[in-house]
Length: 343
Image 1 (cartoon, rainbow, N blue to C red):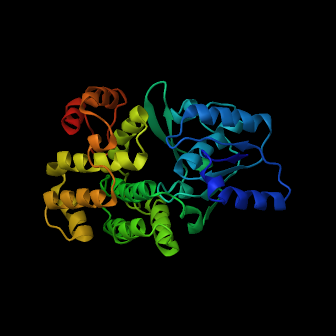
Image 2 (tube, rainbow, N blue to C red; image 1 turned 30 degrees about the horizontal axis):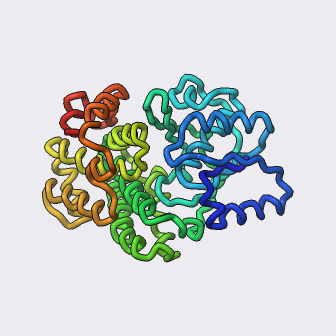
């Protein structure tokens, strides 16, 4: 079963390159297209039913994080006769999976290098993640040429996303100085090459550097030696995607500065250490401002209004974040915390 998004892979030729490979081995191909940028459980359920009906042997995901995440959940829904949301909320535990092959077309989430997936349930306005070893791709093809057609805004969101992944683990539980250096190196790659790529979107070498950094950011290397990452920024940002269909990377550039400003008194040294290593700053305030300025330089929003989310939506956002118990593994958040950050 070939899974992809809304047709960009046909415009840029990736679809035909993949289909030629499949034809060369006489593969019988069932296509499921239309996966949305914020993937949802309904599409995954529909595709899973197609997979069961046609007894597919392999799921081939061609796309970015949304497509590959969706395909990951399909691979466990198909043989386990279950639905996507029951998997995501851990009601049904996968016991087997259909093999997944990923062909990456957007460097951002790092999903090609792990067993994690994020989906939205629009009925309950909730976007959550799930991790399972059975969802790890059997093979991932990373060809920078397949990312050259990604537009400016989503290229920028990809840089934000890879940096956010590294920082989520950096602000997690436990000290690991070598792993800190891994984090700083990944952040420095994004800072060094992200802006240059936005000025030269068809540059193969720059696409290559960002693709490698994104893959490493969520490959596990940034959490080694720690008890866990925090993931509070993702937890908060997912609500903006669920409510307003805001692109994932844009939610992260909005939430990260606000989250750091609110929590800076709880971890001033940690913020300062990152700022010094990455931006050459001193002190938490200067470090946060430098990160915010870099997101602005990329053209990614740092305020909700910049993403088209108006002030009158604040109460809805707060209510949804509280209902969904948004917060991190290391820094727990209550309703007062969330309200203060959003305001």
